[in-house]
Image (tube, rainbow, N blue to C red):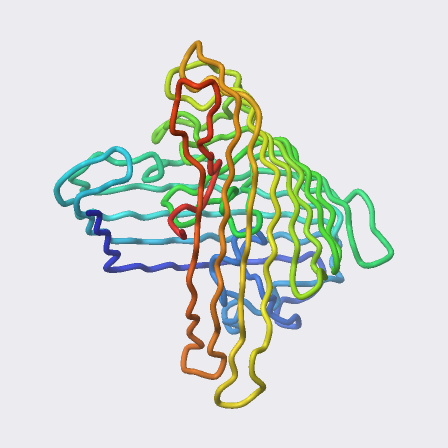
Length: 363
């Protein structure tokens, strides 16, 4: 049985912003003192106003900032079940350093680069592909605003190396829990306003966490044989919650044993939300839910020379309550998950559902 215990964890964030016109001391502190893509992972790092005063100046045409994150983790792992399987005990240390630099012109252009140095030290068992990535580029992209809409929305285009995260991360996640993240390289066209958002993307996996070759000490390059594309739309004002609709397409042209190749399409939907079950006061309770399902079809050649039709699916239901006025605001929830499998690998149809690029650790 797998037993993993994280005995110690430390994350440090540092950011610095420089402006072209106004004095830093005259400006308020922003809520995301780090990179826009990283701020959700380090909630509250922008609340230290004494250190990060004035990290936003909307009057400036050009704005730049630099910073980084440092995470240390000690792991005691026994009888590991994740690949490569290994019996016994391993205690080891991990660190991850992610410096970044950003230059923006008003809200029209963003130039962003983020490096990574992730290392595993003193491991007794063989490391896995999400453990190490020495001195590499995690993200580098240009993000350009193409148009504005009448309801405070914007259409933007992002080109370059980037991370993707959608919905409950059942199928697409930047895998921040791992030591190396998961990144892609390509195009992303996206629109967002207060009521609706839609993303269209076409990217190729880059690092080992994204399914590419594991290169812990050399520069990561995109997997030229694999494309991951899709459209993900969100109705933020659906009745009672938020409604997601998506189509995803994984196209793998390399033909190799044990490699999921061919064309796999995923169409799915997600409905999530929350609702007050009791009023304000000492017993305030909020109900929460997250329901998702998807169907996969296409054709694959998982076993060389044996083309199979794909017919697979999954269902997930996560529901619970949040005790709003209790100390630390705890959440009590339960999850149901079903994913189809294949009973007969020789019948010409594969019923095994692929989770694509998930945050599996969360489920």
